[in-house]
Every structure is written in structure tokens, then in C-alpha cells.
Length: 423
Ligand code: AMP
Ligand code: GLY
Image (cartoon, rainbow, N blue to C red; front, side, top):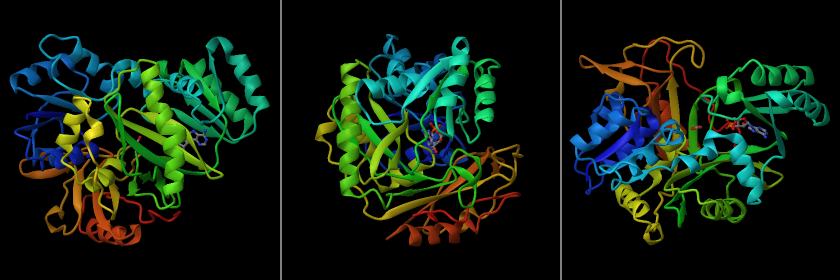
């Protein structure tokens, strides 16, 4: 089979790395990809939201399946675009259709979905410019900290948590009246603050059946001890030690099953990954958010733990036979440590030459923001490389990743040295 992956990050490199091991694979393409995917697949110079461009390449390269990495093209309806096109409609797309992708594209839609299907989550109310004054009054009634969420996609920056009422009111005004996040904050969800530890659960569904993938925990803040600004993710650990069988059973019964059933009841067509962001509050799981894709960098720790032929699994999703797949997981722990550009997540420079990649032993280096130029590999983003290792526990796996990341160099290289500190 000829396969196209859409995306350019560490998640897409990890998917490409896994699919490249499948005996069912003929040609692998990644659009637009990075220097890591270029080494195992053919990069196609096209953006993930350029649907007509994607169509041209899919037809000219005889691509037989498309796997969508990031949320943007899904929320914009890439799957629907395929289904509505006579030449493309027989080509399976792994990723939900637009109506279902709204689970990530609109926080209000996701909250309404959870309420309708009795899925445990934080209490909330949503507001618009017209109801700004009600929003201010609502803030006065609830306990701090105040959780304000822009309804739409805001590149991971749309959630603001504030301790002071005055600050929260000003933020609400900025979001609704001054369009702080553009149209994404035309509606704002104000939510009860949930105090607990977070983890992510990934579910793969064919729309009827589902499989739960290994759990993972990511480290979002730039600074050690979970301090400083939010990032796309500085590292991940899979499995999450506190997600024992009893807790996972609760997640399956109270969250995963009602979610899959809810998609069916609401006629939301879903073939793809569901990333459920959870928080454990007094022993009970509650949903913080849905994403309609895999997490990054969680993917770089989760995918290497799956023993199955991933292409076979995707074929089962496409043909609604996921019930016939038995997922086999590597029992070991996998960890990913992310190397980022100096200055990230604020302003940073690109184009720094990366050295030391040839000296890595016992780790897998997934490229996140890299590009190739005249035989050199250069930094090309905030998150640059994800170094994944296995171990009998997260401590020993981290040791290997830290030993190897120390061999890699580029000007400004930064990484967190305290992953797992909270476990
Ligand atoms: P999100 O963009 O929805 O993933 O939110 C970003 C982060 O904000 C989450 O990973 C949580 O750490 C935090 N967060 C979101 N909602 C809540 C909540 N209701 N209570 C506490 N923390 C939250
Ligand atoms: N690591 C969090 C995310 O992918 O959204």
C-alpha cells in the first residue's frame, strides 16, 4: 500500500517510523514532513490544509490511505473533502469527519457532548460578547482559580487559568470583546477548576469498536518542577504509573464507552484516534478535553510500545473490523525527552546545525522541528527532537534518554532534566 501521512512533527515521524516497519507498505509519503521523515519516507512539499494540492499528490502517487496527524485539517474537514470527491471517496482517511472533529474544534461543543452523555467533567458555562456582563457575574459566584477557555482552536494557548477575580474579569473582556484569540474566543467557556494529576488516554475507533492504547503523561511547562510557560510538550512517559487496572476500568466504563456510544447516538462519524485529556480528582477520572488526534510528544512514547503492524490496525479501522484486532503492548516503559530551541516557547531562532545524531545508541530520535540542507540537519522549530528510550521503569528509561540527549548539540539546546519528578 502507498500511504500518506499529513503533518511535520515528532508525532508524524513516530507514525512514519512505525508504518515503515509494515510488510504491507509499498511507498510512504509525508506532507510536509521534516528531516527525520525524509530519511524513511518521501516528503511532499505541501501544507496540511491545502486540500486540492493533497488531492493532486494522492492521485499522482496512487496513495491508498491518508493518516492525518494534526487537528487543523480534521477540523477543516479533510476527511469530508475526500468523501465528497468522486476520485478520492474510496481512499480511507484515518481521522474523524468535520462534525466529529468539533470535539476539539469547539470547547463548547465538547462540553455539551459530555453533558448529554453524562461523561464526568468540570461544571461550566459559556459566554459571548452579548453576555459578557453575565460572565463577570458568573466569575463573582465561582471559586478561584478561574479557568477560561477560548472555544475554538488557539494553537494550544486558548486556556487561561487565573487566581484573581479582577484578572479573570479583564481576561474575559479581552477574549470576548477584544478578540484576544481572534474568532476562537468569540465564545468563552468558564469552567470549575479541577485539582489533581493529569494523564492522557488514547483510544482508536473505527466508529463502532474501539481499542484503548497505552496511557501517557506529558510535561507541558518549559521549566523544571512544572514551572514557567506552557509548551507543546517537553516530554512524555508511558505507561502512567498511577493508572492501575482499577483506575483504567473506571476510565473505560465512565468515559471511553459513553464517548464511543455518544458518537454513535449523535451520528458523529469517527474513524481515528481520540485523545482524552483526563485529571484524577479524589480517585475519580474527569475529562479536561478531547483532542481528535494523537498527542505530541505522547505519540513518541506510545507508538513504539505497540507491537502490532500499525498498517494492519489502520486497515481494520478503515473497514470497521477493529474488533478483530488484538493489540499487543510492550510491557516496558517508554519515555520521550524533547530537545527544544533556546528561547522556546517564546521567540527562538531557527537554522542551527544539529550534531551528534550519529552517536545515539539504544534510543530512537524522532525529529520534530528539523529540516535538511546540503547534507546538514538544521533546527526548524521550537520543539526540535524527541529522544525516546525503553526501560523496566520510567527512571531507567529516562537514564538512557538523558545519556543520549547529552550527545546531541545545537546552539541553544534546552531540555527538562526532571521528567517524572512528580510520579
Ligand atoms: P487544554 O488546552 O484544554 O488541554 O488545557 C490546558 C491545560 O489547562 C490542561 O492540560 C490543564 O493542565 C489545564 N486545565 C484545563 N482545564 C482545567 C480545569 N477545569 N481545571 C484545572 N486545570 C485545567
Ligand atoms: N501533548 C499535548 C498535545 O498534543 O496536545
